[in-house]
Every structure is written in structure tokens, then in C-alpha cells.
Length: 117
Length: 116
Image (cartoon, rainbow over all chains, first blue to last red; front, side, top):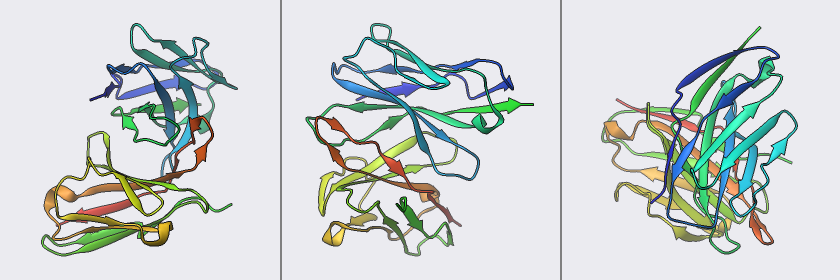
């Protein structure tokens, strides 16, 4: 079974600064995907960024980037130039690769991020 | 394109009663997932449909929970009889097959269930 751990229940950052959210996971699988999801207050959870485990290059999506360390089983999210709209609950998630099919997500406990003006 | 919708948004029931939650996935999405977040804990997987078939129901906590997806469209999750520990937020997500990689899971807003 897989486990995902987010060690920072809450964080805050000043607008325009950079913040890094931590995530570690434990698995015996070799083929898998990692995700960061964002849930703004009273809104639906949306995908921020994804990483395929077989890719060494870290994924980036505009101001969001990850630091994927496969050997250390670490998958941190960096948010650059933080904006007020980044205030949300952030969930790290793991998905085992099962052929071409979809599969369940295993989530961490979440990190509540507040961006301060 | 409409997103994943869930009904009701909130439900308050008494212990022992029955509640049915509904999820309408994004049109054309064959994969449908149910998750729940009990207060203060992680979001946990409940089950996964591919069209109308249960692909994985390993996360269903007990036989008081029954999920269906008739016709491979919307899904219902019935809790009967509800217990206090069933309180939490129930999320539904859907995705489509996307060639060699799994499609993104799109989440609904969730149903907040309170059992008194």
C-alpha cells in the first residue's frame, strides 16, 4: 500500500514571494504518477501539476514547479510569485500506473496555504 | 463543458437513517471515482467505476455503503443505515481514457454529510 505524507499542515507566504510545500511518499511501485491538487475555499479541487515517475525532468506549469526526487521519494511544490488567489488547501497525491486505465489516488493530509497581502 | 456535479451539497440526517448521494460526471468520462474526507483526516478512496462496472471497490468501508452506476452515466452512493462515523465530505471525480496515460481526474464540489 502507498502512503503520502504532507508534514506542513499550514503555511503562509507574503504576496509575490516564493513558497515550497513538502510531500513525501512511500511505495514499492516503480511506475506511478504524482500530483498536486489545489482546493480554494468553498471551491472544487483542481489539478495544479502532475509528474510521471519515469521522467527525470521536473514538471513546471507557469508559476508552479516541482522538485521530484525519486530515490528520496520526495515531491515538493514550489509556487513562485505567490498571488492572493493561491490561497487554498493543497493536496499531494499518488497514483499507481495500471496499464492505460485510470486508477485511484492516494492523498496526503493537505497543507493549508495562506497568501498574505 | 459542464464539470462534475454532486447533489446534495449538504445533508444532515440522524443515525440510522438512509442517505443517497448523487454524482454526475463530465459527459463522456468512463471513469468515475468516489472519495471521502472524514474530519481532520486524509481524503480516502472508496471505489472506482469504469462505465457501469465496479473496477475497484477496495475502499468501501463496509456493507452499509452501496454504489451504483446504472447505464454508465451518473452514480449514486447510498449509506444505509448511517452511523456517526460516516460524517464527512464525499467527493466524486471523473476522468476519461487518454491513450497511454490516465486522464486527469476532475473533482466535484463534494457533498458534506453530517450524521447526528
